[in-house]
Length: 296
Image 1 (cartoon, rainbow, N blue to C red):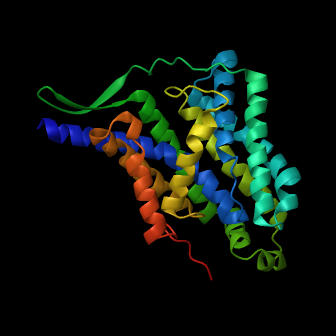
Image 2 (image 1 turned 90 degrees about the horizontal axis):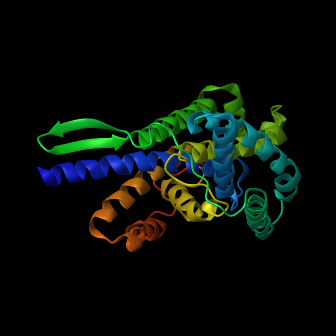
C-alpha cells in the first residue's frame, strides 16, 4: 500500500509540475509556429513575469496569481515592441543572424534585470504556501498536493486552454494560423501579417510571463532564473513538436512526469539524467516530436 501511494503521489507531483512547464513552453512553441524563429531569449520573459508579479505583491499587495494578469498584459505589449524593432528586421535574414540577435537579447534582458532589481533573490509570502489538500487517505497514507502548486497548475491549465481556444475558435486565431502556414497567401487574402507576427510574439512571451508569476509562491525570482529554465523549455517543445501548442502541453506533462519519477531512483544531482536521455532518444527516433505539425 505504501508503494502504491508513493507512485500515485509521484504521478500527481509530475502532473502538477508538468502543467507549469507546459504553459512556460507554449509561448516558445507559438512564436516558432507562427514566425519560424527560435527565440533563445524566451526564458528571460519568464524572469520578467516573476519580477512583475513580485513588484505587484510587494507594492500593491496583489497575490501572484492576480499579478500574473498584470505580467501578461505588460509583457504582451513589451513583446510587441521587441518584435517590431528587433525581430521584424531579421525575419528574412539567415538563421545565424536570428540566433545571434536572440542570444544577445537574452544577455541584455538578464543584465538589465540585474542592474534594476539587483542580484538578490526575491520571494513572496502567501497564506496558502504552507497549506495542502488531502485528495485521498487510507490509514496513515495520504495523497496530497500543496495549494501553491495546485493554484499554479490550475492557472497554467486555464491559460493554456485560453491560448488553444484563441488559436482555434476565433477569426484572429484563424488568421494567425493562416499566416503561419503561408504568409504570402494570407497577405493576398487581406491578412495583416505584420500584425499577426507582432501579436504572436507578444502573446507568446506574455503567456510565459504569466507562468513566471504563478510559480512565484514556490520559486524565488532572480535575474538568472531564466537561464535555469531555458533548457527545460526547449526540451519540452522539442519533445512535443516544435511549433505545436498541443505538443508543448503534452511535452510539458511528459517532462514533469519524467523528472518526478526519476527522482525516485536517482539522486537529486542526476534528476535530469533520465530527462535528457529521453530527449536524445526522441531526437534520434522521432525528431519531429510527439505531435508533429502538419505542413502542406
